Image (cartoon, rainbow, N blue to C red; front, side):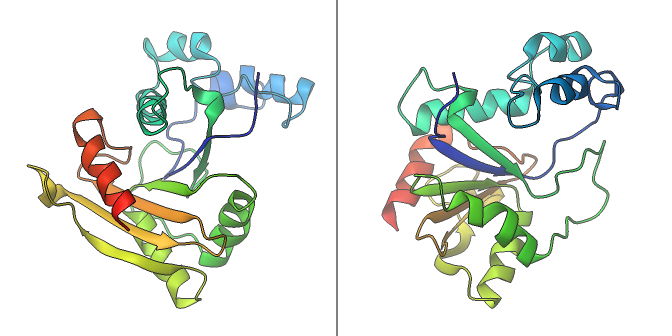
Amino acid sequence: MYHEPRLVTLGLNPGVAYDEILSRCGIWTKRIAEQGYSYCFTRSPPTDPVVWRELHGTTSRYWDRLIKFAQRWLSDPNADVQDILNFELYPWHSKSLTAGIETPAYLVERYIFEPIAEIDVSEVFAFGAPWFKVAGNLMQTRSVRQKMAPSKVLGDSDSAYWTMGLYELPSQQTLVVSSQSGSAGPPGEIRMETFRRVVNSV
């Protein structure tokens, strides 16, 4: 049963494309064609773990981390994929990104932040360093106001590799950007207390 999202997250890109599920004749593509894009929900790693596991031998690490983050942030151990609305900055599949992600600010504003404004959440969580550049570009257009400049997170033993920044969107929602060395995902359990404290302090 799907309902209003309780958490909005922003990632970088959806990773590798697999012909078996994403090509014109792929399993998920056929489902979308039969049911319609807006009605087909079994077309992602967490919503169709059986097909995903057949290809990978395991669940999606990225989505496992997002769901755990949702449970911790919402203080609800039952929170699941249906509670998360996830956007990607570069929404095309790729095996690896060999250059910086460059997405024009007006596209991000129109196709990501304007729809998010309709969702009843106070914070929007962006994971990965490229989101700092997006926020900076939107500050130049005055679409975003800085609440906390990007800075190393204090109180963490490995803070040299963890940066956070907070911004106010036109919707008055707070954009929380978090970047960790070697990861474009949310903070894990040991960093959650620090993460929450930084967000709540601004």
